[in-house]
Image (cartoon, rainbow, N blue to C red; front, side, top):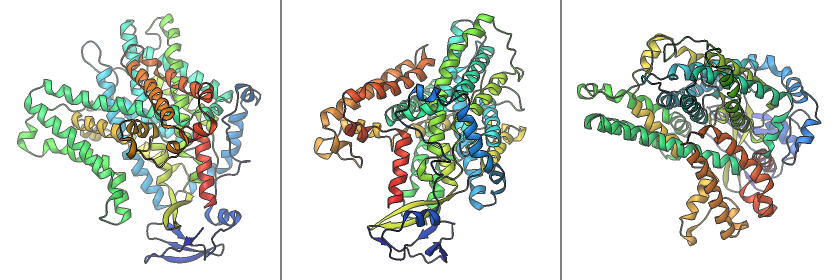
Length: 586
């Protein structure tokens, strides 16, 4: 394998274990091998760093059984997590003085705040009581995000994982509200008891080492879940735009302009990495903040002219001071529902636990995948325990629960990486040199989000038009499809046979009729779950997602060979490990 040297006019020459290194002005590194085509792995690990060893980190197996997990012992996983992470706790707070850490704080602030505000619109519309007052809104969502981020950054095992209110949580919350309203149950205490029961289940799952079951999760369930959420985002955005046409032509046209403008500009700016203008670092910056730039600009458009200001467009419903959206007290009166209703909340609590077990552990896995070469180890069991404690706190406050965010969690890790660019057989590739594993970026982004709840910033939030957030929903939905192999295979169904191509191996390893049937069955599963989210039984959708995991593990191997399954569907943990090993071999 031929490895070509890198030439950069802005470089600072140095030596790392006998290998030349060139440092670019933005802190990235270009590495040359001095003509050696295949450097030894030991030398490579010493010079470039590697992920934690298998003895120090936790390795999961797709073939693990419940019996294997139960035999590990009570609390063994949590204890091993603490032993693995505790020696690094001091460094997590002291190794923070780097430009990438500072940049990551503000990057994660914007990438966490914008979706949080967007989901609050969905919650406001879905939790209105009989007099039209929302029971959950922007303040509750931002407070929940700030509390979760602060607690997890201090007490969590893997602080690179960013927590917040997700789209699935918003859907679940609206479903709980619908159920409580149909049963004539006071929503807020019922919602609180739901989270209390869920917190207990979180803690029990962590104590009994059940987080190891995340190794059963494969692309099939994750990508079905991804397309499902994308469809819900698209529907929410389009439905919000449609509602504006009931408020007069001037309001409708301005709202349509704001929504489509936000969507179009966010889409174009986020694709800046493919531009040919500006230097790569500027293009990267524009792409990272594309959605945020679009929201800020189109939130200002209605105030740029007298005619626009005179148009009565709908804005966020935010109180002028720090208080709940409905005006209730912050702590929930748990006795304000019947004992039967409080006990019955264990059912939605179970569904919430299933959702978080899937969603949080996948986000945690993605933010510390093996190709990131992290050195301080994982803490899946302990982290799920901490998430359970946070769910208990949000339940007592009657605000939405939080878990790991996708894509914010893996984006956080990526924002802290220093990389090396190298050329293999004429193709430029990138390798992670070092990740600044610390707690400050997570803590301070949560702190800044919390500051947004002060009076001056609440007034500013109240000026944001809802139409811009409808546009953001459209953008988030469309942006969810690239990189999703299920979405790619759906597109191939409508593609002319002679023009079907993919960078993935499934077209070569699976006969088209079998691949087509596999994709159609996956689409049927996704369609059924999507339809369920519009019914009163919407809260069971996490259970349906979990059933896909069982379906993949027990049924699919009877119809597809190991080679066929390996090309179209792999364990996320195995996929990350194999990807990292491929990079090491290069």
